[in-house]
Amino acid sequence: MRNRKSGYGCPEGCPVEGTLDVIGGKWKGVILFHLIDGEKRFSQLRKLMPGVTQRMLTLQLRELEEDGIIQRYVYAEVPPKVEYSMTEFGRTLEPIILLMKEWGENYKKLVNKKEQENSIN
Image (cartoon, rainbow, N blue to C red; front, side, top):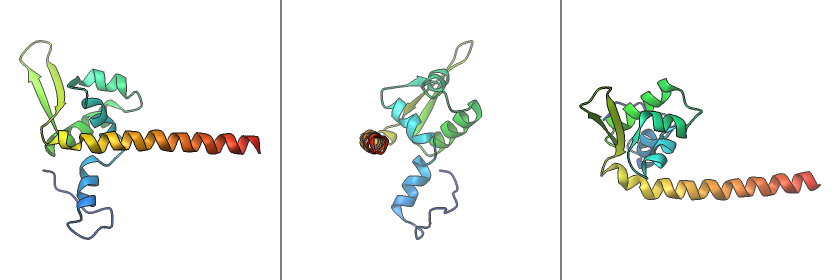
């Protein structure tokens, strides 16, 4: 596990802070969402997330791997083939990620509705 510094203002040992340390950030939740369907290669993740830089994707994948949430499998072939998948422990985040997806869809509908109301007025 990575060594972390507290940054969310929770008392030491706060479980919410611990969760945010692992899955927080702009890209980790998105990476996990895409890995729910199964293993993905680095290039597949890049295509699914066009806004992420190669460096940032590499960093986020390494952190998730260090935290035991995903695993990296390197095939013994040339050119090298590497796939990422969720670990058994990482799979315990699946219901959380799917709830975040549902919440995001509902929030988007709410924002769109408010924008329509504002454009009418």
